[in-house]
Image (cartoon, rainbow, N blue to C red; front, side, top):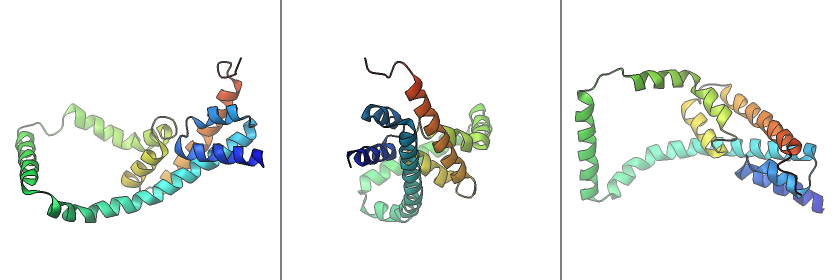
Length: 170
């Protein structure tokens, strides 16, 4: 029964802190195979949960904006409108296709792969799920690529942790 609680705790840690879960699994005394299964299932569960929840967040923010504008005090709205107007006036004199714009266009083409590959270890799973849902919801393979990256990076992290000498206690 205690062993089952260890596996469950690794699963729950992987849903929240995916990058740190192999270290936690190693120090709880799980085998590499058990930890790989618990970590990947936790990561997949977390990603899918936040991917589907982010759809409701995106939709609700669209409908909450008019309500938020109604309850915002008048002086604050005036400041916001003034800043928006200044921003529009500032943009009118700029060049339209700058170096930064070119970089954004290039990133848009490879952005899915950057998000997919960095979600498990650099970004968090909720942020990566939100970004994929927001910008790549029409791409049918985006979720599959993200889940594949979670599985492969979970296996890779576990192998690195179990075979590295700096993690082993004295």
